[in-house]
Image 1 (spheres, helix red, strand yellow):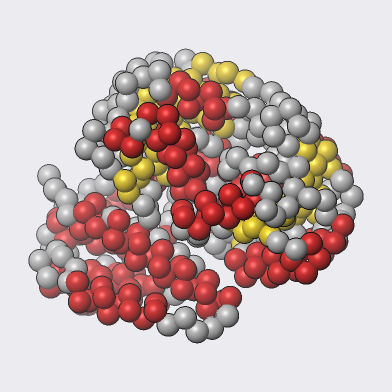
Image 2: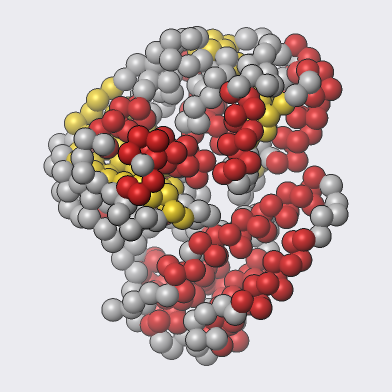
Length: 445
């Protein structure tokens, strides 16, 4: 794909401006395209819309945990991490590009912004505060700005019992989501639940229950902040901080704005609030959210994607490479790199890393997500087991080995914490199954 800054368009604005709708329409004005989203739920939602519009045979869905790839597919709806870079298409669209400034995933978004282009059109969707950095990266980019269709207004603190119908309550971990859902049911009756970890079928069923007004309340993680289209009048935060993979931190104003902005749809105004338990929200931050006016993003995370697999030393050296421009932050200690640095020193693995193929295999395995958020030796042991099983079995995973691992998931005992762990483990094995070819079968130049 072309890497010039010609035919680049950025559509920028807050939530409820019709950015995604406009891009969706532009996509189908071309004969082929790739649309990258920040969430698999969002990729699935737009894939379903595309299927209704042009039929199953022309549309593909590519996420870490789900792959639908018809032979005649012309349009690919993907998570940003799963956007294919080995096919030529007329139009490429990347959603929520402000996530290039995110500590965990930013370097992946930056790589796609820099290295994935359509033959005729490339479109970036995002918030207003990325305009300046986009112009530094691509001086000739065309910027199209959109205003929100409706107003967003702050309401005073509210208890769950005082919430009006068509409200969404936001929590930042799965256990809290279910705890709040149970609380709401006590006061209000039925509640729908939306989590990033739900299967597409379960998620669609929950959304349908809410959208059909069988229930009036929704409890969700911040997953809904990334553009899921739901008829929400009010957003209530149960907390103003979240665990971001390193530590608990306060949500930034633009993050709060992204989530709160799901309230109101098209020309119907929306409101947001937080519970008493969440603490206090600075009046200046409230003003920023209501006016959709956030500090500019001046730096994106960056990591070299042109990796050298000739040896362990050359691979580590290529990961250490620094960006040329000062508006990039060199991404250090990404989880896949941390995994690699741990496993290359393992005696059982080290002896196999003489070949380029085996080194590339290890790198691919190190990118298996830690859905359980273990950050400990159990996760590394799983990666090590997978690597050694593949080496010992001619780069294939024996069916019996997988069956043994998966059969342990048939134990349905325990409460919500145990259920959460089980969902995460299912996601891990779903990811491995869906990425079997790309992870373990590849050509090395």
